[in-house]
Image (cartoon, rainbow, N blue to C red; front, side, top):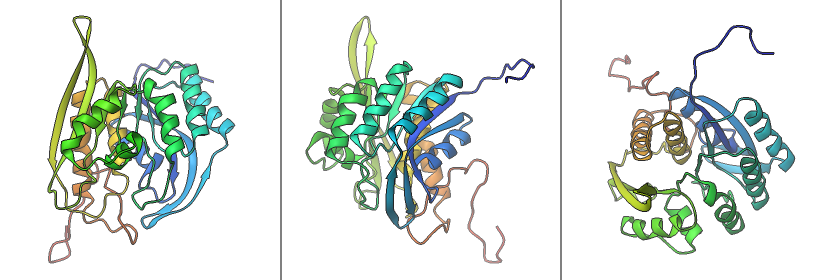
Length: 294
């Protein structure tokens, strides 16, 4: 039952539909941390449960399709969402279930991070899942955010570097989304500068116009990069929900993740690559000085 007191404070509502990372560094756990850190209200739909830590993924259990659908219905029928961020969808059937539910609820804004493979190399989808995403979700997506490996899988050919981004983005944009952000972080470590490439459709004087923008930023020297892609997509979604335009939302999200990587450089979480530090604005991290004091 609703409170009898009137409520007047509205904050952006962001729904993440993604897999659960038991280690807390990626997946919907990272999404909810980002959404909260950026001042929005986060909700979640669990599509899969992973047994996962900083060393890798050891097991994946898909959630029953009717339970995925029921979670979406429960959130959207009551609370609603200003934007939906989609991450790990581990099978074509889950893709179809999510797409059908979002169409039924007439969801207008979707950021799709086509998570198909973990950093450790574990498969989180595959060709069939990729094709289902293209058919079912790309035409609904406000933005898709593949990294180089995911873009290669979606296009069926290798993308070798930033010089390939424009053509790849054009081909992905032709598959139906309103915008494409190809992330360059998977270039080998000899590249000290990272390029992310954004291409989007807009309407000017009644005509569709294609625009693009490069975002160049330095590579943070750290092994703690777990959950970077999830965090970036969630940050973009949250900024969009807060009414920033697309280019500005992407720029602010990149800056947020870069700050999280910088703040997380010296965190000791697990035996493998740890996560970035999502709460850097609230709880700064620092190295101990020679006397053991921060």
